[in-house]
Image 1 (cartoon, rainbow, N blue to C red):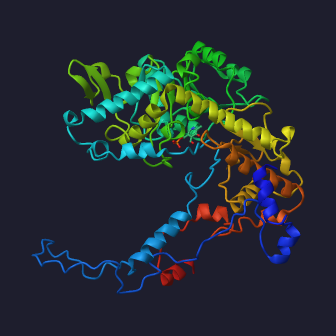
Image 2 (image 1 turned 60 degrees about the vertical axis):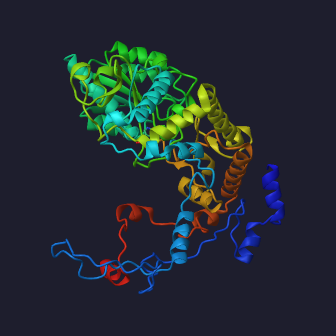
Image 3 (image 1 turned 90 degrees about the vertical axis):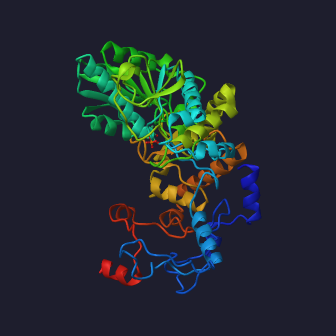
Length: 530
Ligand SMILES: Cc1ncc(COP(=O)(O)O)c(C=O)c1O
C-alpha cells in the first residue's frame, strides 16, 4: 500500500466487510460516496405557469406565416432559473469525464484536453468562419491547415496528408479507397485484405465496406502478428494488410520491417491503423516502417476532445504511391500562395473525390496544432515516452509477477497500454464485468473490457501521459484492493456493483437491444410498456 491508501485505510478505521455489513455501509477504498439527488426529467418537474424569464410583451406585427400559426402552446416545462441551472448542473455531474478523474479506457486514449487549445479554438477568426466563405477571405485558416499538414507530414515522414476524414474509421475508409484506386489504376484489382485477429473492429468493417474479403491472421504467443501465418496467407489477390502498431495488445510489432517487406513483395499495400500513435509520436516515423497509408485520430494523440463518432478528425498520411489518390479538397502552394483544389482535374485527376462536405473539422485542427506547437517536437517525444512510462508503471504495480494481483496476458514491457486477462479471477465466480462495475463504486471509470478478443476476459488499461504518480498509485491501489477482495471471496461486493451510482446494474442486453431513447409523459409511457 502507498502512503495514500494507508492514510485512507487508517482514517476509515480499517473497515472490514463484516463491519460494513453490520452498519449497512458499502466499503470503498477511495472513500467514494454518491452525492446525487433522485430527480425527474425537466419535463417531469414542470409547474405550469412558471417562467424563468420576464420578457416584455412583444410588439404586435402582421403575421407572415400564411395561416401556419401555432394553435396551442408549445408545451415547454415551466421552471424557475435556479431549477433549470441545478437540473443541468446535476446532469453534467452524472457524466464521468477526463476532467473528473483518471479515465483508463484502453484503446480509446482519453487524453487531457489542454485549456490553451480551447482558448485558441474559440478565437473568432477561427470559430466564426463559415465553410462557404470565399477562400480569399480566410488566408489565416488556410495557413493553419497547411501548418498542421506540415507537422503531420513531418511526424509521419509521409509526403501527403488528407485532413478531411472525420474520425479514425473514416480515415481507414479514405486510406482503403486510395489503395483500391491505386490497384484499379494499375489494372490489378485484388480481393483480399489481411487483418490480424487482434484488430479493432473498424478495420475489417472498413475493408468489407470497400468490397474486400477479410482474411484473419492469428497472433503469436508474444501477442504480435504471426509472421509465418501472414507470409503463408500472402498472394497475388491480396490488396493490403491492415495492421495496428502499436497493436491493440499494447505491444510494438517488432517484426514490422519484415512484415512490410513481405507485403510489398506480394505487390500489396501496407495500411497501418495509427490510432495508437500516442506511444510513438516523435520517436518513430511510420514511413521508415514501410507503411503506405496510416490514419491518425487527432483525439488520441493530439488531445482534441473525443468525438465519440461525432465531430472528430482522422487525417490520413499517404506515401508517394498513394498521394495522387488523396481525397479533395487539396491545399496547394503555387505562385498565388495557398490555393484550394476542389475538383478532380489536372494534378488531382486521380483523386478519390470528396469524403465529406467542406474541408474537415476546423475546431479540431486548431486544437491539434495548438497542442503540437505548445509542446514542440521535443515535447511530443516526451509525451510518447511518458505515456509508455505510465503504462509500464501500472503494469509493474498490477502484475502478479511484480507484486500486484492481476494476470498480464503477454509478460514484459508494454507500450502505452497494458493488457490483463481474467486468470486472476479464476474460481472466484467473479467476471471481468463484475470487476469493472466494482471499480465504478470506487469512483473510477472502468478500463476497456473484453477487448482485444485474443485474450480471455480482457482488461485493457491506458493511463496516458498526464497522470501523476499519485494518481497512478491511487488507481493501482484500488485495482489491487479489488483483486484481493475478489480472491478472498467477497462476491457480494462485485455481483451487486455498482451500488453507489444513481442507477444500479442494468440488464445490459435489454439496454442495448431495446433502448428507451425517447421521453414520454407518464400516461403514454405506461401504455407503451403494456
Ligand atoms: C485501434 C483503433 N482503430 C480504429 C479506431 C476507430 O477510431 P474512431 O473511433 O475515431 O473512428 C479506434 C478507436 O478507438 C482504435 O482504437
